[in-house]
Image (cartoon, rainbow, N blue to C red; front, side):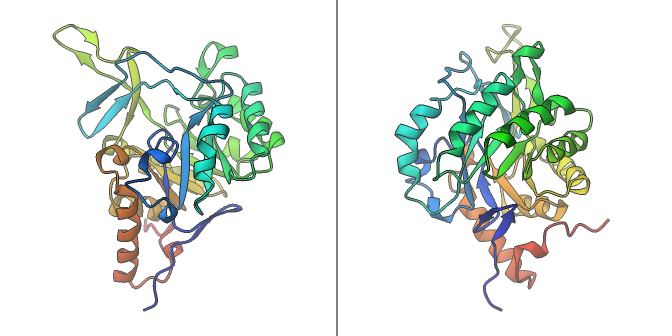
Length: 305
């Protein structure tokens, strides 16, 4: 049998394999350069960026939990200008597509970020984080309301011709409704899930362990929830779905592909095993050969109900 093919299409975005890095878990790429061959990755999604630098939340802001971790980093980042000046030149040397994860506190901020990135020829696409609080709506996250989510995506769509991926929040009643809303607003793909809101308490001090009180739960603990939501969304939309949530091994990634995901993002696993992405790519190849499958596309949506 010839070597199995791993390339996938996310709309107009072509990946050499379906394994991407999840925003916020891989820095700006350089942090993993000595540990990971960045040219082997399907895609790199850098740490979320905003128009201006942000210090994020005060510490403590990360805590390990059973089968995962809670984080309340608060989207600390260097800002788009510093990224273009100090980080992008390093990333330009690789053949792997680079996407920028963006967020804003207002719809106009999202639009301004999209316009700024649209001018960057070395950026392959934009991932829109709609889990952020809308300051004009009392702090309610854009991603929990169909109309607000669609407004953000529609605004971003008007400001850029680049492939547009929208990262969905799981903290909603029906994630498929949100997915359909952003698809109608111009999204080229959706990625899910973002973290699930949780908290931890120190029983000795009787205080929350995170300074922010609550944080985002990630890791294997959320994988069954993520898998279910990916399956639901893949049946509801026509655009590609990217699976995220506790993917630690090729077996995990393959389950998401079978559920309907076209590609996956590896996040918390990078903290535990910096080589996780490459191991997943290699083991997907092994699985395809074992199953006598010519292309990874043969797995996508192959769930039997």
